[in-house]
Structures are given as C-alpha cells and as structure tokens.
Amino acid sequence: MSIRTDIQYKDGSIKVVDHDSGVDTRHTLPEVDRSDLLLSGKYGETWKEEAGGSDPAIDSLATTQAGMSRSFNTLMELREKQSPNLTQSQHLDSLANDYDKAVNNYGSQMDRAVNYANNRLSEIDTEFKGHIGWSEKDAQELRSVIRNMSDNDKADFISSAVSTGDGQALAAVLGSHPSLVGLTHDQQASYRQRAIRSNAPKLAKLEETIAKARDTTRKTFLDFIERQDQVTAKGVRDKYRQQAEEAAEARKRATGGGSDASESRWNMFTS
Image (cartoon, rainbow, N blue to C red):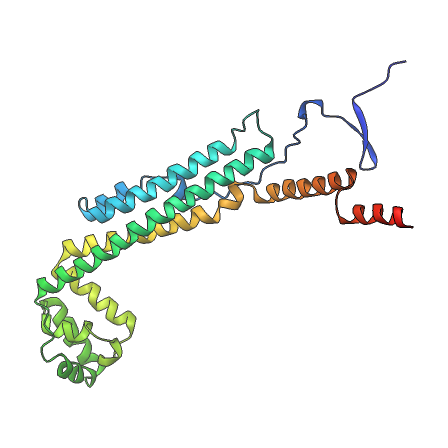
C-alpha cells in the first residue's frame, strides 16, 4: 500500500501540496493603474513643437518628465524580475527602497525644473510689458474712470486697448486687483491672454507651452507618488511584516524570552 505525500489537510479540507513553491509562498501582486504620463517620456518633443523651438525651461521640464517615465517603467520591470536568491518579502522591500529613492530624487529635480519655469514665465511677462510699452502713469485715475463705465463701454474700452497694445490702459486694467476696474479674476486673465496673443504671439505661444509643460510635469510626479503603494505591493509587504512580528513573538515564547516568562520562573522558585 502506497502512502500519498502530496496531500495535506488545510482549512477544513484535503488539498494537494505545492512542492514547487518552496519556503517562499508568493502572494499575487496587485494590478497597477498605469498612467499615460508615466508610460511615455516623449511629451517634451511635443512641447518643443508647440513652442516653435527649444527653451531652457522646456528642456528642463522635458528631461524631468522623461526621467520619471523611465524610472517608473524600470521599477515596473524590476517588480516582475525577482531574484531566486531573495524571498518575495525581501524582493518587495528592496523594490520599495528603490522607489523611495526615485521619489526623493525626482521630487528635488521637479522642484528645480518648476522653479526655473516660473522664473522664465516672469521673464516672459516682463518682455511682454516692454513690448507694449507698459506704463503705470495715471493708472489710479484710469482705473477710477474704467470702473465707472457701463459694462458695454468698459468691454469696448478694454478690447480696444488689447487690440492696439495700449500699454498705459493695459497697465491700469491688468496691473492691479481686478475689482478695482470692476472685473472678475477670470475676466482679467482673459484680457491679459488676449493682449499677449494679439501683440506678442511668439511670447504667448512660449508662455502657454511652458505653463502646460510645468503643470504636466507636476501631474507626472503626482502620478508617480500615487502608484507607489501599488507598484511596491504595500498590502503584501504589510502581511509579511505582520508574519515576521508574529514569528519573532513566538520565538521569544519558545526560548523563554519576554517579561512573562521571567516572572513565571521567579514565581516557580518563590512559591
């Protein structure tokens, strides 16, 4: 009579033993919600085309976005390539450590690129003002006049200033809080956008592209952070960590360690 060694009683039923799994029982890793911004590092090429050429701010943002994409895809590749010398727990801890380093590195790089982009946008605004002859002479008086105009007259006045590039009128309208001329923030922003597009189209295109590249790079970094727990399988790592803690506690009890065991030995000799 042969005895079967390939079965075991588990969870209330008889099951076949998986001899190939070894000591390391692997858990299924969670699916990763991949982001288009992380999958592709080609956004910089589109930005340069939209801007009509290269710019240091765009180059910096493009390099950062492409680097985050490359790092994410490499981490995803590492996720599936567990070394046979490591348990799944060790493999995931190593992956989590690599991911932390990548987040820190690209967080610093993104901050530098975004700050540079913001400074470049300030330079473009200064160039635009110089182009239209921005002048705040009599700005306060002009704002008082504009504020007291009817809505139609006000719209006609500002539209005329936008189309002709009247630097003095535009300084009064755009150079202060919008309520001082009876506008909302959105209306003021719209007039400013129309003014730079009408009077300095190349600067407008560059400004729009840098702002878009800055916001896209920020979003790429947020996507990178948001997927960290998925990529590194935090839920699985937590299970292994709990198992390790339970094993450590059991080892203490088995070897007589811990305060309870010491107290029991003392009671045994003093009773």
